[in-house]
Amino acid sequence: MVSFRKEWEILAVVQDDSEHEEIIHAEHRNLGRLQRGVRTPEAAYYQPILKVLVSLGGSSKIGEVMTKLEPIMKEVLRTVDYEPLASDPEMPRWRNTAKWARNSMVKEGLLKQNSPYVVWEITEAGRKALLKEAR
Image (cartoon, rainbow, N blue to C red; front, side, top):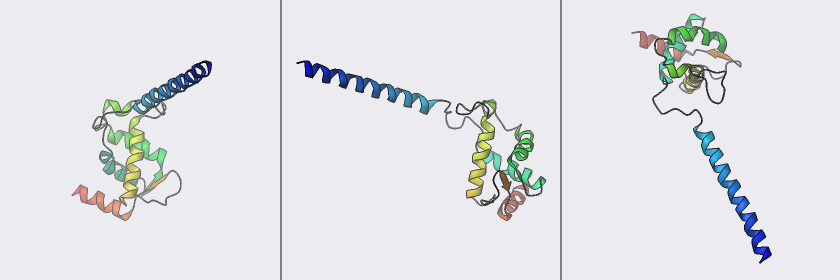
């Protein structure tokens, strides 16, 4: 009987820990997560990023791109875009979204993939897309 009690106590502790871990993981997954459509979408960043890069001679470091991008995006950005990320309280959400937009633009061939670290560089396809949008 004593061995069954010890085994039961061990199992009860293990189950409590696993339930606690599930709660922690569930809270972590939902921390700072926005509903779809609340923030400004990545696609809204494409043309402004291309315009900024052209104005900077076709390439620039991320800091300078972001500095010039914000005033251009000001009319489009929502209040939620200026809120800090839960994962990085020092980073406003719009900057993070701009970085994801850059990643998507690289995949689409609008920005160069093999640019030096922290440098964003427009491709010929990016220049054409910018001209096409201007028409």
